[in-house]
Length: 299
Image (cartoon, rainbow, N blue to C red; front, side):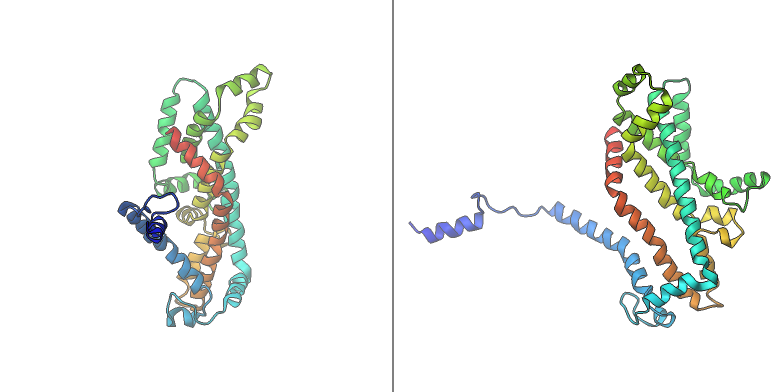
């Protein structure tokens, strides 16, 4: 008996004696498509990182996808100091709009979604259909009517003109209702009522804790949406000290023909503006995944 041949066959077959599995063509195709999609979405981010390290001359005179003259710290310091540090003001405004607006929108969406999931009242499904219609309605279509409305009450060109519309999240209500139906057991609510807890206390102590994954998901979507919102502040605001980052950087870009250094400042500011979004995504992704998964299973 040729032991060397048997040993070689066993090595080829694997430790369990079975032949090694070849990757399926469908799996290879899926991996290739996902790789292409990842490169498609990450390439602009990579270009932004590279471009933020260059001087104004290097921004247009060198290869766009590779580093040339590294002036990263100098460029970032110019972004923060230009025009008496107006970039700091825009950053604070963005955090104000996205942070407070996202938090209040999440709380209101949770309350509305929980009520639509738990309580039985006449017209409940009609209300939910109106919410679904709000999901399909583009926000840009509401900007001009909102401007006319806020002008009538004297709130245009104020922080409230951006904050109040940001507190409404139809998608958040939809997701919270689906999640509440799946994750909030009626037995827990009935036990709390038997123990003498009121509806507000039940909501604050039990429901909010149970729905935490959905709330983090809603907050993340709302935060990113408000942070990247451009059209609503453009319509509502005329004071550049109330601008968010999106609108402020656009004003720099529009003035770059007269002041060429603003091209580099706009690129550096755009790079800095995505850092909070990346940090929020990395920190909250665990809750975000579980919230979407729970909603998809129920749906």
